[in-house]
Length: 330
Image 1: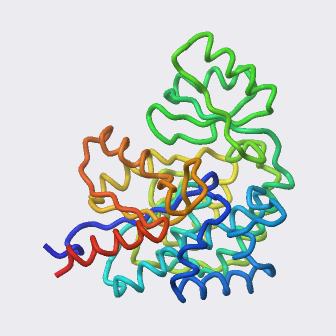
Image 2: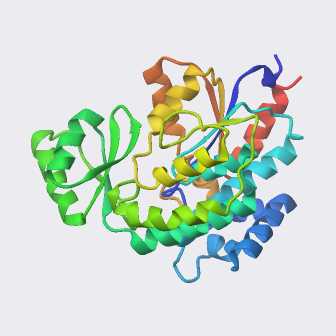
């Protein structure tokens, strides 16, 4: 069976999957990756390769730099993959987690890489400037977490899985909420996340107000690939104004990632490819794990849906996935 007889979906990670050295392996090996990084540096006005690979001023975890760095890595991985596979995959769907939604729009051809860079550069700057608070992940369902969060003036920031809900708020409010959860549910251990603010909550309203005018300067095009909206959990409308509006609302509303996956599976997604980023304590790109793999596989089990998952997040996984494509293409 030709691989294009399956319904193919491209996915892209968001903040939290950055690390110093990210992209250095493919930059050394592939001219396409070097070209992508050069283009990004020209648009951004600084050397994104040096920042991503060496992080000499310890800036990679600052939101204004994290977002362009992750977007560049994701698109570099995607473009090298396209080259090595002869651009033979015909995807039907694309999705990204938070920042990754911009990578998905680029991969779908709905947004140029240059415009995406300008958007996320400003988006990250505004989120870092106006953002307050922090974020905590709770291994619990939304309906259980929400009333506890509201007691402490915290807000739901993301619904990743039926049993994984992210909450944002002031550090002291989150601490009280975490204590209450551990008293009521001793087996549920909250995990504080490393972010500069309570993203995707009311703490981002000022950033979103400033960002609205930035969105107006970007051009969005019609695409044959359907892209999922974190804000609605459903597919973006092809109307550029509707895309702008949903990206605006995405800044201060929860990321409906599990709904995104449910929508994709209901639409028949049967082959999922993840591009970019990496997680895990190891320092080298070769030892990183894909950011979204665990959530995608848990969502597949929860939805009783079958799909094949592959990743291209470093040189080795890239080559493995390229071989998979070549071995399954007529």
